[in-house]
Amino acid sequence: MKRIFKTLLSLFFLLQGISNFAQTNTQLRRGKVLKEKPTTVFLIGIDGLSVDGLTKANTPTMDMFVNMGASSLKARGVMPTSSGPNWGSMLLGAGPEQHGITSNGWRVNDYSIEATIKDGDGFFPSVFDMIKKEDSKSKLGVFHEWGTIRDLFNTKVLHHIEKTGEMNESLDKAFAYFKKERPKFVFVHLDAVDGAGHKFGHGSAEYYQEIERIDNALGSFYEKLNALNKEEGTVVNILVTSDHGGVGTSHGGSTMEEIIIPWILVGPNVKRGHTIEQPINTYDTPATILRLLDADRHIPIQWTGKPVLEAIKN
Image (cartoon, rainbow, N blue to C red):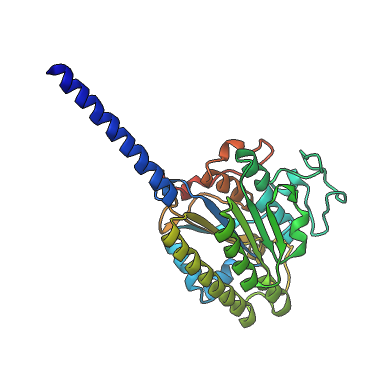
């Protein structure tokens, strides 16, 4: 009798284990277990978005992101406060002193400052390289409105890169790419706010209006993304930030208005409604992305950036 009982008990645990395994596989297929490990990170870079612009323009979408996630209105770019050095630092995890990008005219074979490390093509290691190092099959996408973006890093590791014309096209194509390919990381560069700053001036009505237009486009993008998340169980993080602010119709100088930028992170592993107190620099963005993708063991020693751990749960 004892032997029969033991046999039946063993059979019960075996069947229970098979049931749990099948249930786990089903959950994985449906995306229910992915909430602790987001499948995709979107980096939305709004060129020329100052803290003044974000706080004075009507931005319900970005305000919602602030309430939903962790944010700072005291993050900093790098010197000089030009686009090339700052987009480079945001994607390369270090400042111009390390990657050597000191102007908008930097090219891999035309520069003044030697990078501290280069790959076989002469590029400093980027966030794209490190994600690929963690997962060689990962798909990585870039949609950029400023053409020079593609000159700042090695594009060989990308699955898709595309020059786009304006904000709605950029965000629509980024969403379509995500829906079709399920990439690990997508960078979207939006240029209109910087254009308004140069043409009409930072603090002008036209400058604030352009921020509101981008905020509206970002709202439509988020609605579609959120609907897909609910329908198919996809899980994403969104990081919204900028390269620089501005003074008058220019930037590149050494003022607080130019160097201070917003930094907003939203996602399932992100603290909700949290104001980040720790210092943030734009070159901390790539390290934070790697942390969100559980790939921060690949942060290169040449990077000066570190993950913004205060923004992340646990």
